[in-house]
Image 1 (tube, rainbow, N blue to C red):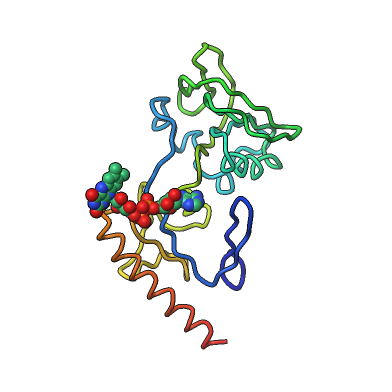
Image 2: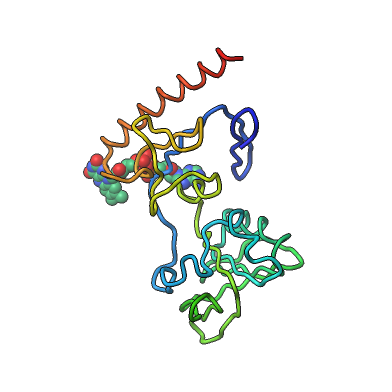
Length: 208
Ligand SMILES: Cc1cc2nc3c(=O)[nH]c(=O)nc-3n(C[C@H](O)[C@H](O)[C@H](O)COP(=O)(O)OP(=O)(O)OC[C@H]3O[C@@H](n4cnc5c(N)ncnc54)[C@H](O)[C@@H]3O)c2cc1C
């Protein structure tokens, strides 16, 4: 967020806006069957900016291989001791930094007792790590939400009947707000969010 509104960073551009409507669906990009659920809040994180400082001077891993994984790694490298990007069988990204290494082996499961202590690969090798940041594919709606401090409920963004989130000027609609995952509901919510966003901008401009 910037003082006059928001800034949206894409892979090749940046946009500023007075208001934003999040409509990024509810797709979740998570590696399956590696024990993520067991360690949520115990070493598994979905947000480098939010949780990075908890891993100051520690060795952590980022699971992913695309722009999102690189962006999360960039947010971590000045805080943590080192980062291992785990591509989980995908091609390695073109990314180099002194305290970053890349491992392309497939992950078997996360290891640990009360918290994450390591990652076991399918070849039986174990990487010691104290934090695992999930950043597979592209960032989804709740990934953005967490970074911006938007209130979420499980994997959905919490909105009121005007499609407002808890952050002024930031709306969400469609599958990312949960409930009935149907086109009709998404279209309705998109209409409400659009009209409310126009109202918000008019009020802001009128108040200048
Ligand atoms: C197989 C299948 C069949 C379905 N059949 C029906 C049906 O018959 N009738 C019905 O009513 N509904 C159906 N649905 C549900 C319907 O498709 C959804 O409810 C609807 O598409 C939700 O709209 P949305 O705009 O919220 O999200 P989506 O349609 O998912 O759109 C989200 C968009 O955001 C983009 N996006 C996400 N993250 C990023 C990012 N980081 N950067 C840039 N872009 C991003 C995505 O690429 C996508 O284009 C079906 C769904 C599926 C999967």
